Length: 142
Ligand code: HEC
Image (cartoon, rainbow, N blue to C red):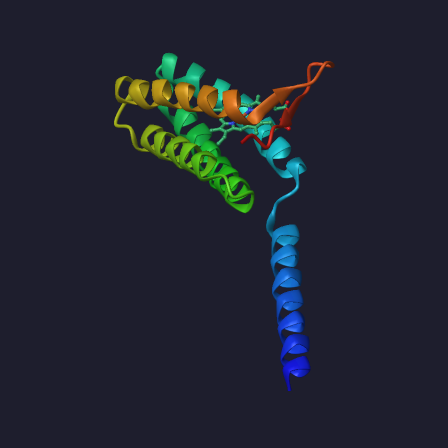
């Protein structure tokens, strides 16, 4: 009876461990995902900034929609890695992009553009590494 109980507990523990490891391995997105997303974010944000400066709101809004989608992907990436602050920064980025897309005019878009610039830098300081060859990589952080 006692041996049976020990055997059963061992089995249950093994199962829990296997499930835990399995779930983590399955959910954490590959760093290639954030690399691809950010390679789109860079030019899109450059275009948005230029468009807002030039008062071309149709272009600014189209770019802001691209950014909004990219930050939803960014949020999913950081969520899959269990980084709550990364998730928050991605959400802040999406909120600012949505504010640009909804802005009544270029003047009103300037504040969210400024906020977005700070959000980029905040996340890069913590989660972006620069390799010796000048390329960027995801830094898992603390
Ligand atoms: C929540 C975190 C986060 C936010 C917010 C964020 N980034 Fe990134 N970014 C990353 C990470 C992580 C990398 C490194 C991934 C890689 O390049 O492999 C990166 C890389 C980049 C790269 C280099 C891409 C390459 O490999 O050539 C550019 C450009 C970039 N980001 C632009 C931006 C801009 C512009 C913003 C703001 C509008 C922004 N990012 C906001 C996390 C973020």
